[in-house]
Length: 274
Image 1 (tube, one colour):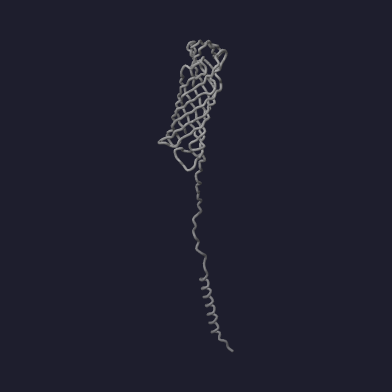
Image 2: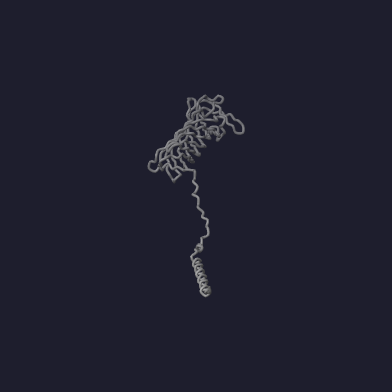
């Protein structure tokens, strides 16, 4: 049987053409790689921390809040005063007043909106005048000790300097108008750090009278006044106070009459709290 090579050749060429066509179609149908996306470079972002909270909490007594925060305040004051002596003996009597002052720093620890413990440090200059009905001997100590004879009726003027640490309770009202009223009651332990005496009849001026004075004393005080706000944390303070010692101011040396001499004072408070 004679083969028809011409038809066979045509078939082979047709099969190759069809195969090549299918391969090209298959290649176009394959999915390509996804397009490359351009990404922005990474930028670090700094997130600021919230500001640190100040643990110290101030308290404005003129702003009423739902809760109370205990706080401390300080102040400085200068109090002009007048002082005088009082005695329990007819042989020794007081003979007038002496001007002085009280300068110091105050401290208040609040345990309620209207209540606080009060304290501080004060330098007090006060005194008084005494007259004896009998002849007495008075001791001065400068470079050496000197015993002076003071005749009956001759006045001795004392100027005494104390270091005092008042301890009290301060009570305040709520705000009334532009300010608030207060009262302070307490005890004042005191140490005598200086004492001078003037005896005019003997031409003595500012003699060292520490041998005639007791070193330690205790007094009580009561003060009332008003605080006026100057700013959020500063207040102007005015007041009036009374003070009385509880123990004998003077010593009974030698032939001096036995008596108890106490000191009283009336002061006028001028100060600022902060």
